Length: 373
Ligand SMILES: [Zn+2]
Image (cartoon, rainbow, N blue to C red; front, side, top):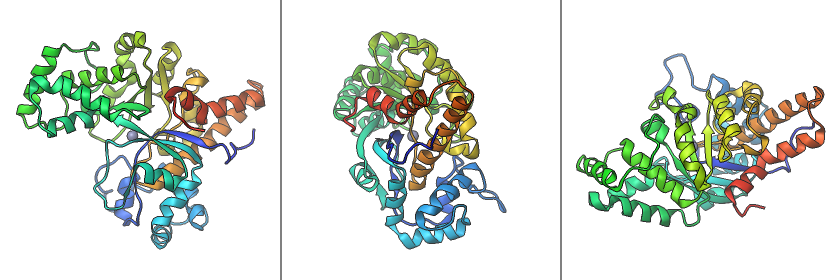
């Protein structure tokens, strides 16, 4: 099978804004890792699988040989100014970006929303982060007894043109929760305690569950952070199979659930997509971070998950490089996996094309019902 053609434009189903301008090496390195502290003396966050992938795929887009040294790459990036971001985003070959706007850096040259889409030459739609809406409602001032309807109303307004909602329950509490919809009284009590404490970062299990169920009420697909992330996450509690009882309760609603990232639980996620008609898996974040191991990891995603329920995203955040790395790694890994299967006689080239176009774009178009041509 030939490399997925550059003309096959991907739907990036979960991504974020980026810093458009030049960055120092330290700032760049911290945006290319899930670590939240600088590397120890003598080490670099860029000296790992993702750093190699950035040098491999991004250097040629800025006119340097693949694998140019980091210092040379960053100097060239600075010369290009904001045009570097545009070149990198364009090179990703994207048809559409579904942008989670619930997290951003306080940078003056933060590129988000329509501006990000214009830079990438792609359509943009929003993914609304549930916890961010709740924190906005609290910050605006609300009585405990009014929190439940105020949140539902704010979410309705925020999702009017959105393609999905997103939950970071994995970060805030973990998936070992009571799966049922909490009562209005329980929400009021929990809201009272949260608001009396000055409404810090929302970690209350009752409120997080309420948010999730309000997400179900929107009828939009729900994206869930699962698997690895930064160190504020307790990894064993981010295993998506822990939410099995919740998937059962959600199923009659007809609402779809998208398991993002998944690694190292991507095999569990594949099983969930296999047995639940409304569960999907998304390879975002993972394929960039595992670098040269992208093909075997993607093959593991594809061990049990139906091919119509695997989705592409980059989960790019902060660095425009991550849009290109995600897309390039995905194209190369999918081509490798499907070519191996063709050689092994497991499928025909025509079958492989159908799977490739599905995972790259068609599955997302169908799931998110987005106006993407
Ligand atoms: Zn994300």
